[in-house]
Length: 123
Image (spheres, one colour):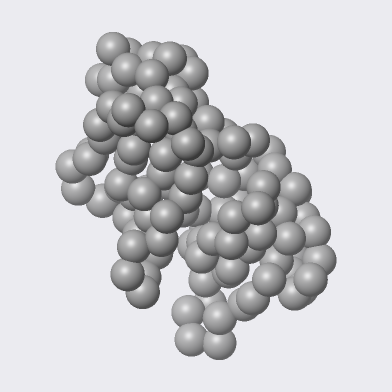
């Protein structure tokens, strides 16, 4: 769970929300939003990701946590350290069991991961 600041709401895509968390501005896809949200207000939320096809994950030499937007859509590169079932990018934790099952050999390593979208579930 993270406290996020809502910066923008899209007029075109209902689920598109621009947030600020841990110094990053991120265009997210809000999967679950059980109440009305407003710009410039903070909310508790779970942040996750969606990968539509194959996983593109690789070990990196640099250990600089980062979130880099790709193009005009929802795609991002996440740079962080895998800790068990979680990719940690600064204080943002992206949990997925596949880190344990398919990528256990990367536990404790710094990696980059290409995601199709960063998802948001308002709590």
